[in-house]
Image 1 (tube, helix red, strand yellow):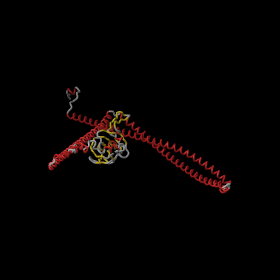
Image 2 (spheres, helix red, strand yellow):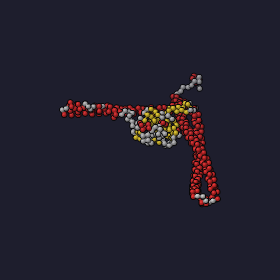
Image 3 (cartoon, helix red, strand yellow):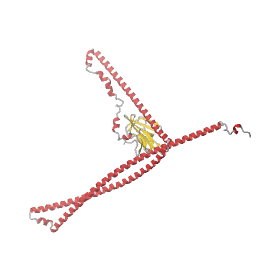
Image 4 (cartoon, one colour):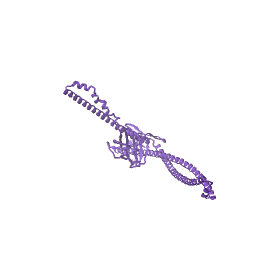
Length: 444
């Protein structure tokens, strides 16, 4: 068989269209597999970041619970010490009462053995002494009765105090058990947190990508809220100017009508000069000019009637979710001490709760806007005068734009993420127009 010069030299044979097509298909497949792998890794990193937030919130909750239990234990310790001290003093008083009572009884019995009560009275040398002995016997009987009642009452009080101490010690034991359980829970949470942190530290660029995506989602939400608020302000200003213009034109029209009516009257009566003199002391024009219009038409900030009510309830409003919940991301810059690169600047707070939980209005207001943002599902914005509350992460809506709501009104069901073990988180913000406020200062 003959070989060509190219084949003899061992050179690569020419690629045909079919081989090029196969190479492109293989490359495209590899790119797609790489893309899916990156997406999978990023999603896993997101889950780990969410897990870290949940664990951190759980640790904070446990630490607060431990601090509260320790305060209760310290209070009970003080109460038990005071009770023990009081019981000791009362027992000493009881012992002294019983001793004095016994001694007096023995002395009286000794006298009565020697002589009966009547004999003691009649053996007196005169009536005055006899009466004195009689009164003494009466007073002794009264003293004996009082001492008996006093001893009985003191004994009952001591028994009651001992019961109180017993209850306090039982509560103390229950608190110590709760403290042990909470400490164990905190220890387990911290161990799990260490594992998540260790894995996150290995993520490198994937972690930065996940954080960047999270920050972008927050930025998109901020931008959309700012845009809506600015648009509302523009519309409100246009309405204010239009109303101001309408009132000014109305005032001008009424002034002109009055002027014409006055002229007609003066002409009919043939007393134009007198009419002019009558008008001079009165300033009819001043009654219809702009100073009075300003009182009827308030400025953009003055026409909000709920502002004071919202402000006066600062720190008293209910949480936007009912039931068990944890704040997994606080207002402002959030970072983890062991993963310094994990930093997210939050415009509100993120509240983790149970699947099926509903979001509720924290104050009376109006549904100003309902919209959708990637990563936050549905977003409901309520207006309370100059103030706004924002509820992001709602799945099934219960309200629409323009609805009037009361505090506690259900706005919708909080979204549960099926790709993250049904993790259920509501993002909540409080704003004064575009100024962002810390929601934890407003709700309790």
